[in-house]
Image: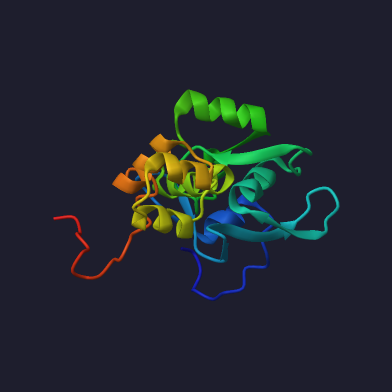
Length: 186
């Protein structure tokens, strides 16, 4: 670092300004942003290269714009080729259409199996596709009615009722949980 912490550096106008405000990891060459983070990614205030007006951009998009000297074209997105969400190294940023981004993910497999994304996708799928609420799942588990009768009441298949009763579906909805019934990973 070439300056004392807290020194005013005059705003972000160049790629070098990004580097100065980041911690450079010598192993990965990632520039880990040390200032404002919003919703998990860097929030960077910079000047529009075309109009000169200030605006706010996400970390990777800001890095790409500063390195190319122009704003992202309409409909384009910016993504990273490293696994660090706080990286603002322009060499780790790519930009293109959503189709290009999807093709890149399919080719590299980079976005797969990231725990936070997997959990978020599961919640989204459940909310979109679920006919049942957690309260209804608890009612099904407590009920002594047959699977066929419950399936008619809730509008799902009898096999789905069986999965719910056995805890194979909606496993995170727990019936009568206490500290004595909870089993943590041994």
